[in-house]
Length: 324
Length: 270
Image (cartoon, rainbow over all chains, first blue to last red; front, side):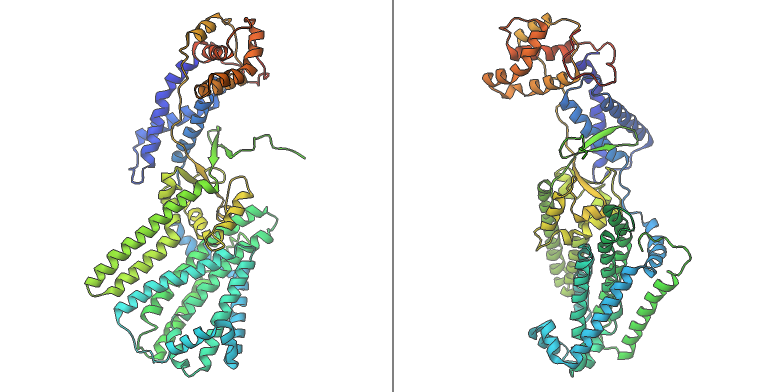
């Protein structure tokens, strides 16, 4: 057969395959029927065969280039991504995730570093006012003292809604930053965890020492457990990424990173959920005029919930750890 | 030391379950930048629209705080989930990537799944260092063969270019001299694969060259061809290449498929 005859006989098939690719790639495309899928598969296999024999058929280079593109596009439609498989995410978040977190050395390390630094800076700031000035800056300290001058007596629902949005925007962003910086060999994660812990520790230590302390704790108690745990969880997930590049457990560095990253995604998602819960509490419960014991009760219940998640759901014989 | 036999290029070869190898062009940082800018613009416009509608709408209703809260939540979702959501639902494309025909695939050329889409966008923050200038991402992309930024490396993904239709047709030869010359060629002349490639590359591009340039380029191939075919020395090199091209692609009958083993890289005259 002449090359030109071959091209003419194949061209309609290629065009049809191209059209099908284009139709199915449209954002709101309907699921194609069985008949069209079969036709697509036939055309795709035919194009694959043409590409395989392109050299033997003496096809011109521009046509070979076109076939590479066409087969690539058809391949992407044939084996397309499956979107969000929520059915698979639930057992992952409630089963595999707590099991993994319970034995996660990075999370333990992040926990120890965060709370160690938090308590150390807190004690220093409690006994010496100069520490808070050095860590936070003079302006922030006076601003904070001013903020808690008045007792907490509630604010209207509309303002609370606005603040809920603001906390949702601001706080998970900090958590995701902790997570992403962990990728820098773990050093970035260590740095940002230590600096966050020092800032928060200085705030708590300083505010405990000043006259406004009652108002301050009246505000922060209710959402504190969720928010601080979310920071620790995000930092731990980030460190897991960073350390997987250093300590590869015998894998190649890239493969080790990819394994750790796969496991880190549920962790960071859980952290975002905790941040969102904390934002709701911070906006609607913390500034309300409820008595202090009810806010303490919210803090205790939220702590117990997290312990239940980690210990009860995580305590299982099955271990599916990817990295130690 | 061993050297890879594949050319130094931005092409990545994928072997599919159909046992066929095809090539993708990997998208470099400066192909991806415009797509990123389009997405950034869309995000900003979207947030501004929601802000305008939300704050005014709820403001008229007497609850401006609701509008502000909605704006902040939408801002959070677009900032961190825009890329992840679109890439997971649109088979590896965001609107910007779709416009510029880019697609995210796994490093092995398969479609990505949701966690890969989400992860590579969560880690954007570290690639964007310092101060949203993407220097970390640029250094990372420059140091591997698939232009992967750190987020891509962690998620095991890459970005490829999906081009639209290129020219498929064989160039028709109209010049009378070339057709006459083609008729004089021995009917059993077998054109090797490498010669066919060279002829096709020359003939598809010769239109853009001046007459002198054509002669200069064609001479390298036409001279040995003319000698082996025993044609007179005054044969026009450009026309000779067109004639052999016509013979190989338009007039030649491939009565039987050529042998599959690699042919010697030289002209075969039967």
